[in-house]
Image (cartoon, rainbow, N blue to C red):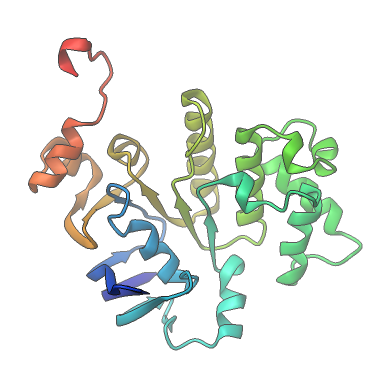
Length: 265
């Protein structure tokens, strides 16, 4: 479904070019969940932005290929990419409150996406938006439709962001640190919900996270990034149980385990 070959991304700065991603390659099969794991600054989020061609100002793909469903995403026109974003490939961003328009009702924000991609008319947009809220297990979706983001909890805002991301039934979902700023209980609820929806819809997904334990639990395969490079890949259970690279081993050692006491920390 998705093939990335020798991808390199750099950013222009006053001190010269900074190489954020250094020639990485990976494939994603239909129905598979890939976890891209690494510390802050490792290049994992930049990789996800490069896939959708939404890099910040000064950022550019220097080399490499990105192919999705036989489409060369680097060669696609900007209009073509706008059609692909949201309809074929969708993304959940780190900060749900920042991802939502603070002065627009959440139901209208779902309608915006549906209508942009021709998935709803003015007449049925409200019904489809409420269904999208229902699908992400928001209680009383009719009332939440008229809520503003500041009236919702962080976990509820993240559910709205997921509803927007899945509104047009994309085939690939990229989740960039989807549990940032959420308490432990809400983190699990959000991740369980996301996993269930991905499975129900037969989607592929990429989870971007610094939490190796989270990735090992929710992903089929892992790619560990350090300093813009992928240093280890493999089935999630194998990478977590028997890491081959020293950096991966350090991430495993830093991951809390059930039943660990103070002596283990």
